[in-house]
Amino acid sequence: MEHYRETKALIRLGAIRRNTRKIIAQYPGYRYYTAVVKADCYGYRGNQVVQAMIDGGVNSLAASLLEEGLSLRQAFPQILILLFTPLPPEHLSVCVENNLWVTVATKEQAAAAASVPNLKVMIRANGGWDIFGGPRDTAGFQEIYHILQGGSCSLKGIYLHSYNAECPEDTQKEYETFEAMTEGLDLSQLDMVSISNSLTLPRYPKKPYANACRLGNILYKIESQDQQLEDTFCLQSRVHTMIKLNPGCGVAYSRAFTAEKPDTRLAAIPIGFGDGFSKTNIGRDVFIHGKSFPIVAVTMDITHILVDDTVMVGDTVDLIRDNAHLDEIAAHIHGATEEAICALNKRVYREYIDDEAEEMG
Image 1 (cartoon, helix red, strand yellow):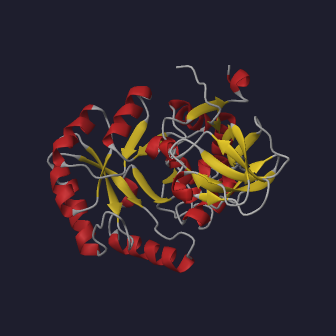
Image 2 (cartoon, one colour):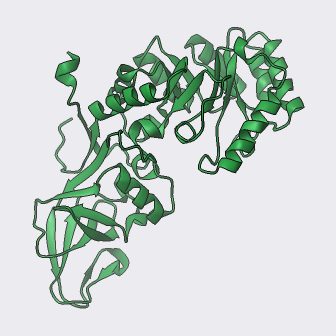
Image 3 (cartoon, one colour):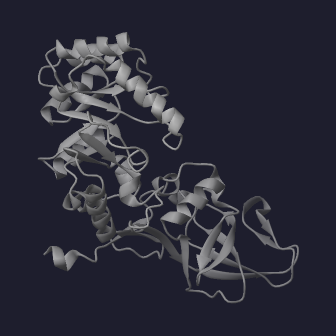
């Protein structure tokens, strides 16, 4: 379909590909480099993004939902695909048919998975605060392990998801919990043991028993201070209309903004909460000509920005300027760093830019 509205997300495929290469080179020694592509590649969307990561060197993928896994399998028939979210028993046969690896976290989930021939299973270890609440003691974990080992399924490995990677004390305790739970087990017999993710990989040394790492935020340069990595995302629009207000006059529903000074200028931008651009953005800055201006109102389709006389109709507006800007937005909305991108729905056009396209063939 033709794209008419001047609001779009710019996705830099070449930067994603180069980031992937750099990260794999920087953290050698793993058998599996798993790209985390859940939530439609953190809101970047498109199999082009996944392909850029594969071109960069990842050899496995991780998603969350069964629907995501099936879509990926159709597009990428040969690659290993892991699903993070445990599934109800009635959906496990679909994973066998489509060669998807599944997650179990509890004894009940393990018992259901063990009864499915040829099902490929990963155990999600609970290091302390895991969202799926598996056992944190050795006996409970090893009961799950032995249920799967003795079943009709195929136990492929174990992974650990760190809950507070920025805190060395919490992370060390989590590693100690993992090592206690797996004590006496021959981890070298498993296809995959993964305890590192985007936040732990740069902070803590590789464990000798780990042969896999999960690359999520770091591929996109989200929550990363690595200066070698490139920005991969920008959300842009253009000034649709300029509005001049006198004191006491305003715009938007429920008098969202009222002018206090003479000749107050607002720029109306074609994006709103109908696009997933939340009202929580009110008060934070966007950029026009490199200068910051605050958002003062958000409606379903239009956002208003308080500007000065340097701004004109047609000017480009950087609503999300770069990946560092995401950190500022997250602090403002009291949310996750990925949240502002994940929230953007299909009304927001994605434009894929690949400065390596000719080189790639």
